[in-house]
Length: 394
Image 1 (cartoon, rainbow, N blue to C red):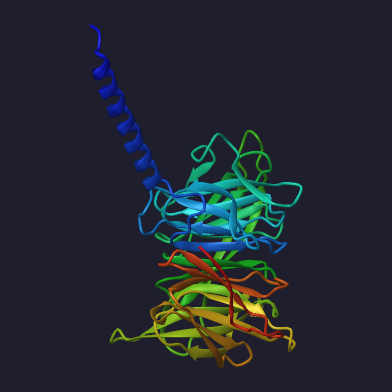
Image 2 (spheres, rainbow, N blue to C red; image 1 turned 180 degrees about the vertical axis):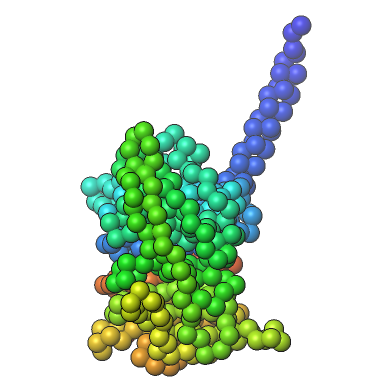
């Protein structure tokens, strides 16, 4: 059977329309390389020039999330990869060669290799043939991460059931699961306390912190995975009133074993009053205690916190807390917890805050969760323009 000339043209037009329709579908489902959407975490490179932004896809605008490297000066993306939806957190190794990402929808831990060109520009790449080969399925709701001082062990927490999974890291080969340890459910954050050689975990439905001391028992080999053991315990939070729902733990830059916690007080009647707490961890005879320096009542809904060192006075820090309900960031001084400023943000619902310790430019990075943008604020208390918005990345 032969097709007429007119029939051939009709067939070609139909085929072209199908291809065009598929392309439109792909464009709609796959986020653009420079898209920012539902920011859940950020990490600044050591040179201060590049910001890694995790877009979590909480609005379900696409079929994936994204991790993107932004050249801050040029305000453009230099490298970008697809990741799973419902992004959690980032962990960048100190040598900036490896990036870990948790994504909650499918319960995945992504491992990404980072290379640098002659100009120091970071380039992201999956070590295997793609996203699936180097992404490890872990327990439900993986979220916050931390690592031992030598970064030989990576700790991954889980929001749902409260497990802490420990992976032995290996250069040039897959990381291996070395142990899983049960803590209270709803782990919202984990930080290392190098002074006491422990890790602290915060919990959504608890008024105490978890304690872990991890020991590597046997190293991993090509034939067998390594093993680790852990001593676990808890420490009561020095709260002025009963409280739960610790959003995150922010480590002090100036003082060892000192932390800031944003959390909620909740009384028997269900009334909630957000608080900011400064505390110091101590140990005597193997017993850990937390001493409260101060606790300050906050207003409105609360997001996350960040701290920036202020060299104008020794040991002084500025503590920032996101207030999504009124599109602002509250600023407190670290000596007594006094409110010293309020940063009103236009067209920005802040939730995720980030600052890199000892960033020479002393910047505060604000993720505008609903508006798909990142603001960079001046947090240098020694210069002019304090709290001003210096950059708007979108």
